[in-house]
Length: 149
Image (cartoon, rainbow, N blue to C red; front, side, top):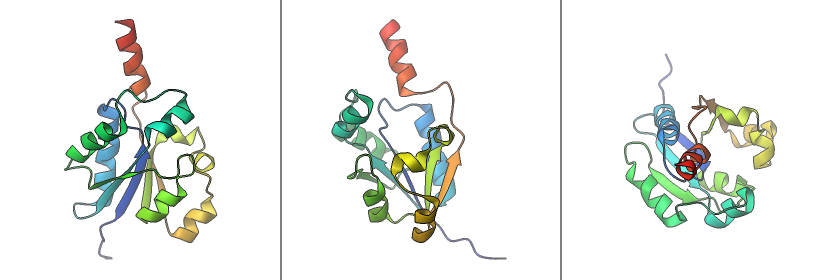
């Protein structure tokens, strides 16, 4: 039987108002990476979030980064998503074995959003893994509840 090597796993996002869905995503990343593997989170800047979503995150970048860095059992390293809409530069800097995203991206065409192709992933020797997502848990839903309370 082939010996398993630990992997470098990359995931990215805004991680505004951390919630159970974020914890589960990071837990999947840790499980895939292995105990001695590395989980790297690419964190979107406030400027990118405002450009992409039309509003700034509730929690500023530095604070979101500090929160993620406290999840020491799940996250090994937090890096800035330096490419904004085109995350390839950050992905290349991290050099992951696997990119992990939530299953909601199956319907949003993650590769088109990130401006890469299956061929590019293959050339970089990177696998793309979709993990189950909690359908009713999101930062947007939390904001709506707070707004309506």
